[in-house]
Length: 297
Image 1 (cartoon, one colour):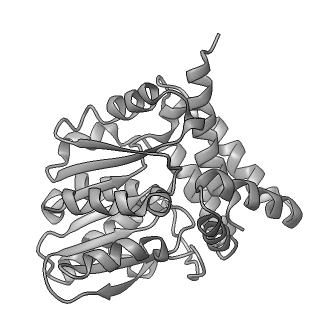
Image 2: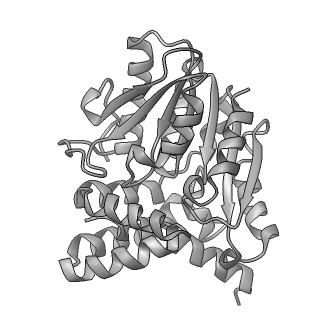
């Protein structure tokens, strides 16, 4: 039988993947897909920092962090196609790996000295891919509430093969939902992803403005992508910031899940921020910003 802590970890996995889908209406990764994202640059001096939002999220999620960093850094706010009002593009799948290649090309094209890369959720997965597959192009790496294989939160022994049926069912159910069902799911999903009323409203709004197909496919890809075999390729100094909320169960279980997932990246520093849900940069902005600033020193 499953222990209470295991049940809570399963619940958290379902909450993060399901709720991310609920906030929104195969191929080989392609190089240099500049149409997959837009960029807004803030600040003009200091080292470059790329900020990558998560599934169905707007670059607005970084507003507080960008304001703090732009005093000493040139901040590149990444706006992902199909998310939060940015128009979707054709043939985006697999989105995360295609975006990682496009960002590697952007760094080279702009002649950036290896920038720091900060990614949340799906953006964290993109950041891991970028640092593993193009290690010379990433100076420092910060991953916010993301695992190299999300399905580990469902089962510590999960594989891509065992995770695929559930991920496929979740994607198909999301695509088949009526508008009324989506509206109810959006409200419930936002409540599980952030603690504050204004944050929940923002998450829900970004989701409503996202392209349903883009998000459903990207969530499916997230659930069946296992980057653990690639972690050893990452040379950048890495900080993993993750959230803990009382509803997630024992702190030790959450700590253990992240430590086990990142054991292939022995030099990574793990930082837990309590009393926060998935959108830790909104729930605990001051503590999150301080952790990122420390990681970039």
